Image (cartoon, rainbow, N blue to C red):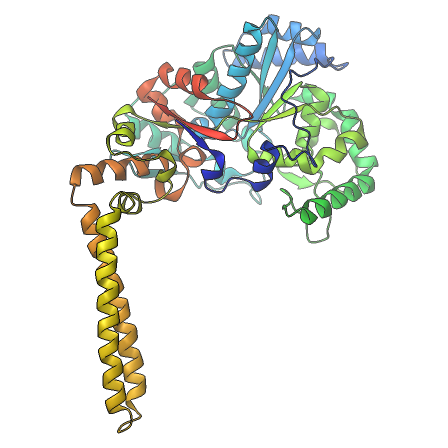
Length: 495
């Protein structure tokens, strides 16, 4: 099932225009990417990545050595280290780069897939919140709000996962405690351990806080500090151009009209905006949303970057910085968009002739559209009844108002009440009409609750871990099979 991305609620307008050929702010090249040469620190970085990945159960020494020698096409995606793997779109990103890697290798082109773990992010609430489907197809919220150090701006990846949250998850699914949720484990290591269990050694993980990675980024950090004013001007100019074209910049300037470029990590792991010109060791330097892609591109030198709509928009905003700082820009690709539905739920599409694009609504609205004659009849009766009754009210007004002008307010209030109750009666009648087939209504309601729970698109909020526990490798295989990058549509994978 392929549905146009225009039907996906809240899709970034810039991305839609870009997919349809508008390259004013960001090139869109679907041809095979040229192979970039590795940086001068590639060998030492490969050794550090091998060591960190081994800790998570990923054995990729030969792949990393081949990458460091410049023998592969490099594909990169990334995400915050959310508890239990985060929302479904995280799996979609992983599946997209796995699919790209396999497709290239089938064509005889060696490829290396990296997944950047955004361990330096400090959005603790987002990382420590999990939504899972409940038994009635609605959402249960497993949420942790533990006491955090200082002002709550600590890098989440190095913080331990709360025992409270782990207990909730294990109880909800009645599963033994896995190694990636062992006592004292950090968000970064927990996320990495789960991904290693699901994907084996196919995807190499990159910890954003890896000291060797930071040291490889030292020349970039120095450029950002020394050319602060030029960077700010370039970003302001691009922001004005985006606004003139009718778009919004993805990251807005602070109140002082400047953009945050770098942070300093203190001895407690807290992130503080780095003052312009201030030099700190690279191991204590942390990137912002705008400079993270620059670090990634300067150190890993990817041929292809796969991102979600927001990340594609980041690249449109920072494209001038690549040229300014001499950082080669990769080919930017939009991740595949995939929703999932168990087969018993998805049967409702065919059984009741429901258009997949209709699910971003309510069961009542969907079924009302499938009862056009009945709904039209009810609406016609309601409209006629309102007209006739209001005509009688006007007759009363014509007779009574000349005698008692104080009745005018009462008559207007009565008209308002009558219209309100007629409309409510119509709404109830239409609901009754569309719910007369209880089996059809229940199936449609479950379909909506699965793909558009609580009026949120499924892949933005619902955990893929819940589906993985139920469907195992079949879930991963189906998502990889159905996911397609750089497409102006999304798919629904039936499990």
